[in-house]
Image (cartoon, rainbow, N blue to C red; front, side, top):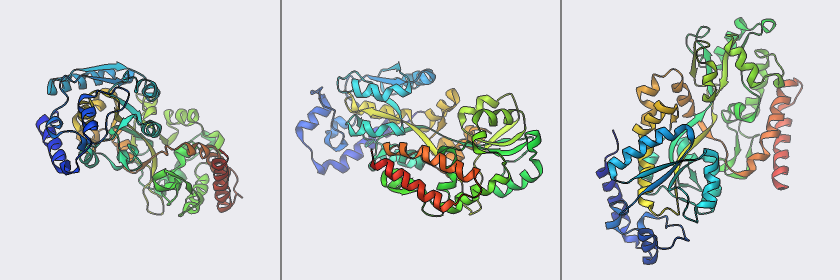
Length: 434
C-alpha cells in the first residue's frame, strides 16, 4: 500500500510549525516557492518555506527522474503510482547509473538535469560540495528510523542526511546445500568441516574468497580496525594496525591450513568453477554472482562466519539512494517523490522486479525477503556491514593492502605486526605526496 498523502502533509505541517520561530530570509523564501532565479540552486532548509506553501507540493509541479536501464520498467510503475496518488506527472529518462553524477554536474545549474536521480554512496561527496544535492530534511526522522544504519551512514555527508536509501549490496557466504544442509555459523565449524572435506589432489576445498581489501576486510573490521577514522572520513587516522587487527591477521594466516593455495591462484573464475562443480563447499561472493550458480547446483546464501573472538563478520557494503537535484524547479514535490519511491512497499516491488536488496528495515523483515533462501542471506550480512570509504584517499589503500594480505598469506615467516606498520606508513606517504 502506498504512503498516505495526508500523513505526509501532516508531517510537513508539524515540521514547519516546530521551526516557524526560526524565521528566514524573505528573498530566499521567494526563491524556493517561485524559483525565480534559475542560476542558483534552491534553498535547502525546510524552515525557509512558508507554512501554507509547505503543506502541498508546488502548483503545476511535474518531475523528471533519471533511472538506469535495468530499473526503468520498475520506475515507470513508481511514477504512475505517484501521479495517481498526488496528481504530479513523472517522466522517466533512461540514463546509466555511472553517468548520472557527471550529468548532474553539467546539467544541474542549466536546469536540464532530472529532479530526482540515483547515486551510489561513493559519488555523493563531490556533488554535495558543489551544492548540487538537497538534504533529506522534510523526511529525515522517518528515513533514519526506517532504514538500516549502514544505509543512513552511506547516504550522509558531514553528518547531514542527503539520500533516501533505495537498495544495498554486500558479499556473503554461498553454501552448497548438499554439503551443508545448514550454513556454518562460525569459523570453528568451517575448519572442522575442512578436515574431512578437503582433498587438494581432487581440487576439493572448503572455502575461498579473493585476496583483495574488499573481501578480506572482515579480518580488519571484526577485530577493531578500520581504514580511516570518523566513519572513514578522516584520512589522518589510519586504523589498519589498531585495535586487535594483528590478531585478525594472525587468524587469517592460520587459515592457510584449510586453503593450501597461494593467494594469487585464488581467482574469481577458479572459485566460481569449483563451486559450480560442487568441489568448493563455501564461496564468499556478492549478489552479482547469483546468476552464475542458478540451475547449476543446490545452494543458499548466509552471513559470513563468526570469528573466534566472538564477533560477527563485518563486511564492506555499497548503498544506492535517491537524491534531489538542488536546482529542481519543484523541490518539495521532488523530495516527496524520493520519499515515496523509497518506502517499504516500493522497495519490495523493486526487489520483486529487479532483485534489488531493500535498505528499508521492515522490507528486510518481510516474508518475501526473509523466506528467500538467497537474498535473505545478503540482507542479514548487510546489517553487519559498513559502507566502503568514499573519500579520495581510499585509492592509496587498496593496492598496498592487497599486497600485504598476499604476503602474510603466502610467506609463513612474515611478521604480521611489522607488515601492518609498514602498510600504514606506505599509505600515509602516498596520501601526503598527493
